[in-house]
Length: 302
Image (cartoon, rainbow, N blue to C red; front, top):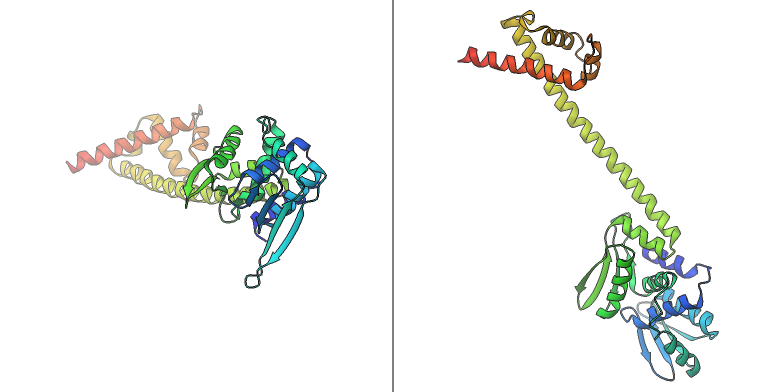
């Protein structure tokens, strides 16, 4: 089972009972979004044709809980592909009338819980999410711009920074940031899936941090080694040409300590002096020594 299917299974099989107002928002999401659902409206019946088993189960549960009515479900199997298709029918004119009237309310998505339930149901019917082991990508796909904008605006309201594009005449609302994808899963109450994604994100982050640290330390070691060799050559050059004793006392002390303790850090060398000086102070004196050596080389070469 794909990660996307596991998320939908978690959402649909969640035993928590939402309020009736939330279920109306969910029903609105199903009836309003036509990308993954084929639906027809009339005064007599509502028909939905889909191969999404999670949508079929979710929709029938919402109808039963919100209107105490069991929708008729017909299952057909394609002989060649073995795929199952679900044909859901609400025949009661009274239920149809109540349902269409209820989802026509301008206050339908005013409450936070209803917004989240709309996004949850729209995920079940119209969304997919990539396996987080590969990359982070969550998208809702609609064949109607107005429906896409509802989801886009809801996600934007939670500062999730979605983007919207047109792909093969469909409107796609997507998020590619791992942290934001995780937030969406938490928002729609897919907490188990969110924890799975977060665990993978932490693992990837730690692995990347370790690799960066190793690369950084390797580069620093190479840089330090190069600097030490260069400084060693400068001090030896000065000793040969003019003698370290010709340097000023502060520079002479640093040069002698550097030669005596080649593995000591700049901080450690600074602490050996009396009085001690800072790491930057040691570095400043070492640069002075290199500058003297460079000037002397230039004079000799000239």
